[in-house]
Image (cartoon, rainbow, N blue to C red; front, side, top):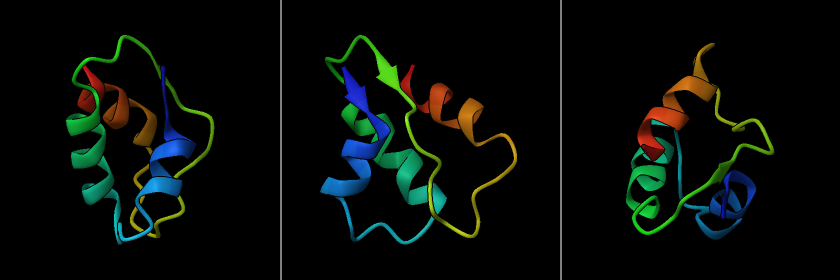
Length: 58
């Protein structure tokens, strides 16, 4: 299972939401489940952030 909090801890270099989406897409390979357990801390995080991260995972 892939946790959003784990990605954020492992990638402190991420500076914006679009970079996070790309990392989620890359890390999705070989994973079956994605748990969104925190809200991304970026100022440019859109209103539909959960949907966008889910789409990047699938």
